[in-house]
Length: 183
Image (cartoon, rainbow, N blue to C red; front, side, top):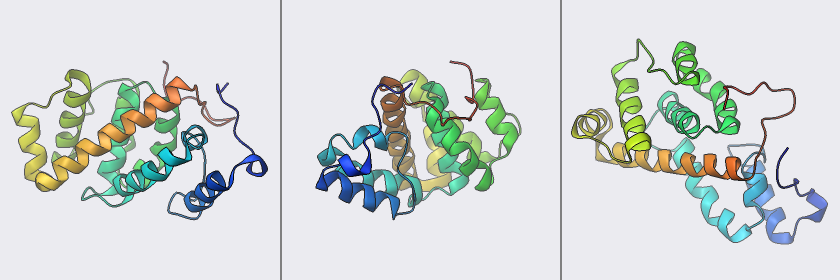
């Protein structure tokens, strides 16, 4: 059960409603999960949402890899909601479901492509040790350049914050959806 109830549209302020309309008419097409928490601070959400849109849809990373990084962050943060929300996008983007299954049980995936291994090593090092070693950095920079390394770092940071939000406010997976992993 979520700590906060979803604010009904008719009870939203004008600022909240404008954000709701902007988000639902954008590439996400829906307003759920962490947005139901962030809407309580329209000023914050107004700034955050374009950053999230850029990180999700417009970085140099292809969807297969950006969604992979999101899943890694969600799993290492033990955040059920973003993992289950982004799993179908990862598959649609071309990520092998076996890789997702390995993440689910916190095991290094086998048979990763070179770009997937670079993202995995970079993201797991950053999230687990709070640093990125030279080998992991060089692998990402070789694959995606300096901008790609920055985009990946920002994406991991953003989805760590997404995960912290859904965990702090106990945002559940949608009704009827099985949690993707044990906490």
